[in-house]
Length: 345
Image 1 (tube, one colour):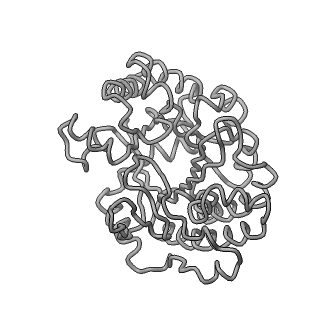
Image 2 (cartoon, rainbow, N blue to C red):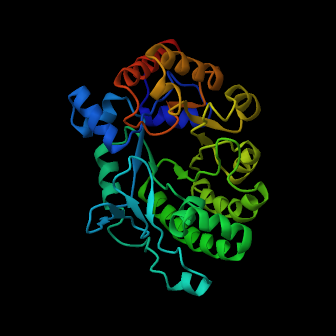
Image 3 (cartoon, rainbow, N blue to C red):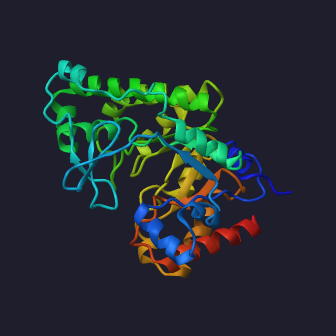
């Protein structure tokens, strides 16, 4: 008997039996336009066509656009390039700050704004309980800090002025905790935090610094959801093997995107398969943009074999949002391979 997409995700995150593995395909707005044209569907119907199981809800904040149209400013005051398909900071508002007093003077966003989650509420209502709802708390801690400060400056601060970094992270955490609590009151099904800690070859900064500065604050964020018995998904790109035990300890229940280039899937399943569920696993760095359709199908089957040989514990997905460099033929191959897995599992 078929179960709802919401229940299917809940079960795989709890390592329970499912009729088939849940799936999720996220994409950039530019790629969304390509997919809408290819499938001859309005953008609002793409997620249904792709059999997405997650409903990601976000804050409602009108972005400010620069006069030249090249920068859009987010809720936190960070400026992002409108000319990039990914994420490129053009304005870091705390780049010149030198003290905690300047942090105090910064106009931090108010997570208590009454209408902030109105769109999220409406989207949840419209979904009617079909999909598994998670808040889009991306750029949660470290990424939010460097976007506000500037990437290079923040890394210099880590080496020369750790107290400033800690003060900055504490202010960010206070905002994120309040926002997370509002999401739990809204009725989400789990937590989701995005916070990249790794590069292709290892952590972006030392494990000891991560444990001093990030771990206790990530634990506070996870606790908001775990104290009401909700699972937590953490997205972190890169080779983060050294801190995976810490992620389990602070309450992370599912790891995303489990990049196959930097994390050994068989080792992950063997070592952490009882402690963690997984979400992702099919490369947007290599096979999806550069492989053949058959190679994409093989990658999907290998991902499932390595991370969900027991038939659960995995949301099958690309390892990041699809961008325009992914050929439509490979998107179709991915979707076909997912459907094949749905039949055989």
